[in-house]
Image 1 (cartoon, rainbow, N blue to C red):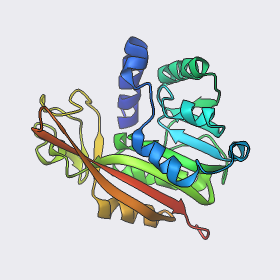
Image 2: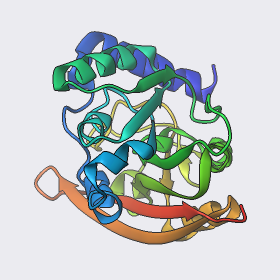
Image 3: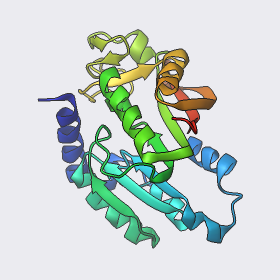
Image 4: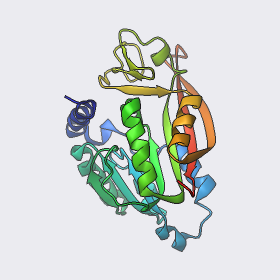
Length: 240
């Protein structure tokens, strides 16, 4: 079974059993900051011209607010079960968007279609080789000058530093979170943790320029377990 099939099986099971509870009801805070920096000052009636694609959209907790804000929204997820709940989320909030079951490494769209691509803790499920494929696809479907938002795991997390009994399948990717007192325990499929330097290099190699990168750290279990995230913003170079 491929790593992406592992991920699909896991999330189909989770969403079929728990529905909304397998995800979240409201949007990622850093994503909203990204939108505020770049798009919320745009006149409301002009926002419909901005095509936004979210990869790994799940139950569409990030997309529905953007639909309410009049952006043209699209989402893909490897789990068809999650998209059924995503459709219900759109109905719940009175908005709409196009949803497709698909892989991040094979985006079902033409070239130079989108103005924005969102990756909120989704490509973490890709090892380095598949992340490379994803960035190639991201470049393909984005217009020149388009923006990309990426929120991903950092190697500064204790879950990566003290990862045993998990094992590395490449320099940045674990075979899952197998330590029982670690955040994200139970995700028994590949999870990639990045350094600012490596992820910036990968974006650069695929025709992007990183314009914003911050590290965010939160703790679990009464400050016993630090977990670090990378928040990144980039744009597709005109010549890429």
